[in-house]
Image 1: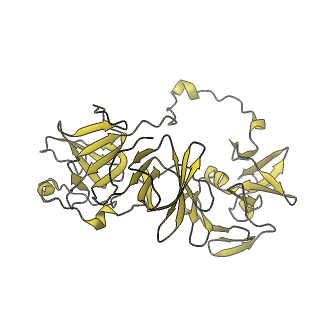
Image 2: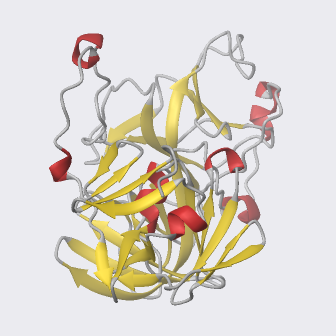
Image 3: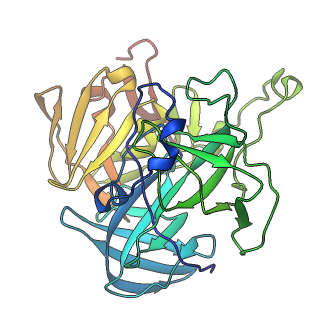
Length: 349
């Protein structure tokens, strides 16, 4: 597990456009902006900040119980996590996790942490995100600046990289990597108050390339589609096979809520305040709420009662199969030939 000493910041996403290079000499840092957290879908990483209440040793690392004023969550720390500082009970931490990573529907929520920062009293600023090289076509680009300019994916921070900028890998070795399109940990102490902010970073750490990122197939790879062996897929959603299993309880077929909803293009959100799960249909077509152990569901403020409630099975939320017809609004949701079928084909009687 890799350790060093830094701090964290997630900056506010702003869409206004203007270059503030002339403010680079008036950089300031405040405790308020040092602790700002951003739930920004354009960023490659989201973050959660809290205090370590308990450290539990796990098979491949540690599970941290994290508390703050609003919620309790779990951080999964593995050998792949880049840890900044020493993990101790009572320490304030910020965990960064991939914005698009699937999250198990359990309570408390579990986050697989990519970068963990253990805060210290001396607060520098840290940004974790994907950065891309700017050019003359970018609205924030300063053509009179000799430094290379990179902007974060959430357009909240521009970093000026010169020959004097220290760039390291996660082992602490000085490297000369191409930073364009890479996930970076950027340490800095001051920035402009512009939107986006501009800074001269003290240190840039290049995170490893995600080994599970799929390669884009060539045209030759997709010219012909092999016949699918559906026997490998317990659940078939709009001609897409899912390896997740269904379960049978009390004579009713249950299916995993998150994986099926995501396969249908919906967004799944866990609400810790009331332990509910919100389903937002593709294109904001509808909004539904699921409550564990209750058979009363809500879709666009309309209450729909099903014969069976949502259940938590081995940390995964399952709903009766009828949920996807009666609440989600699919034409068909049925069990046949050992498989669950959910689709919008012609309605079956």
